[in-house]
Length: 257
Image (cartoon, rainbow, N blue to C red; front, side):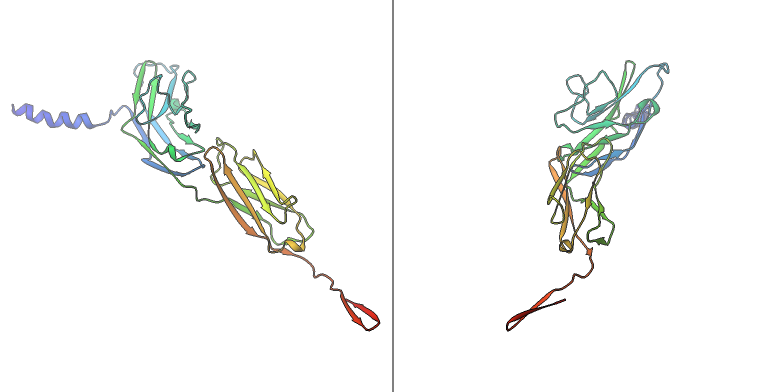
């Protein structure tokens, strides 16, 4: 009986420990703003289990609560024979190669509905292992970041200058946003730059009347349904204008500068 009592704590302790042959390193949580993207580094290790080097190694990311089966598709996978869940139309990307111990995950075009817990599953031959003890918590918050506007100042009246609007949180896998410009100095006053990747550049030729007017760049992330913008005031330098003065005196008019 004494031996049995001594073994029980050991069994309980062993049941709570993670399989030492299967290890995964990933941060516990990540926070990303709506519409933007995030890269989550991840490394994974696993035993060979008698498999040859030519045996394909596949990895999949699931949202917790989903059962890894054909009826419950992964959010991201490198297995060409598996589909990917599309119900939210939000791209999840397995950026790493599990065969090289890389399980890094990319999430783009995020929406608040993507908040949740995610776990990684490895498949090699007929063996599957889910790393449910290493959950990744994804928190999607409201979009507060704004684009950056780059202007080489001072602007000179009558001279062309390049103005660039840079998209916040841009990444390669993201859906290109819509970038639009508004301002009195534009011709026409509003310009759209659809399909741009991470920035939009316009050529501005301001006049004296544009000094002190506003120029706004607005970025719309269509899949997330959110927008952000930044407004700057133009500082236009120009030479003093000739002033013509007309004075009426009796029968005539004198004109002077």
